[in-house]
Image 1 (tube, rainbow, N blue to C red):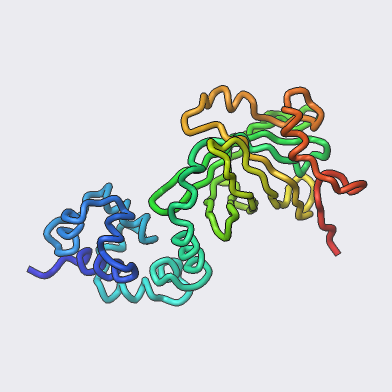
Image 2 (image 1 turned 90 degrees about the vertical axis):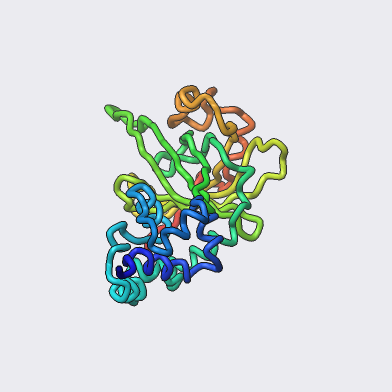
Length: 273
């Protein structure tokens, strides 16, 4: 009986990592079980095929391709699969940064209130619920924003953002995108906190609000740590968009997110030439 293609293809994928033990550790799959996949003794279950596909950046059905075709596809210049598997190009660089950040943000896992100037509405701040999680070696970032814009007749809008977080060079970097449309990217650069326990994390965020044209903007951002198991209903109830001088904002937080840009306002904006 000939060897099943998934065995050869899995061995090919493992060749991009330091060891099979490393792959098993990052996947969270028992080494003995994984060896049966590699030898062709056992076909991965549908659930594990999806886990393998997500980890290696392929489609589950790709594992059944003839090994020669699979290797050709994975190494194809410019292909999404080739970039992911070969650790080449910009995505490969990012993958190496993720590895450098491994384990660095464990103490930051949990939920936060994210307070920042509302880029599209001068004089207002948004309070949203954010979370740092962990998936294997990668730290995930999610934000939920529920606001009613301060204009007549506006309805409450819920926005969701997803991204990743890294600890590099004694800075925390967060890159997120709006998960529904995926038409914009926001970046946060934060100072690490040396408090124990963590109370707040501060930094700066950049973006390009759609309600004010295409102007790139930058402003202060503050993350107030809520812990790993907060009352999420209560946390979401405190979210929204508020005037900077609103009594619902802690005066200490208001001071920390206030910018000092003089007549230019509370946000740094760049006009188009």
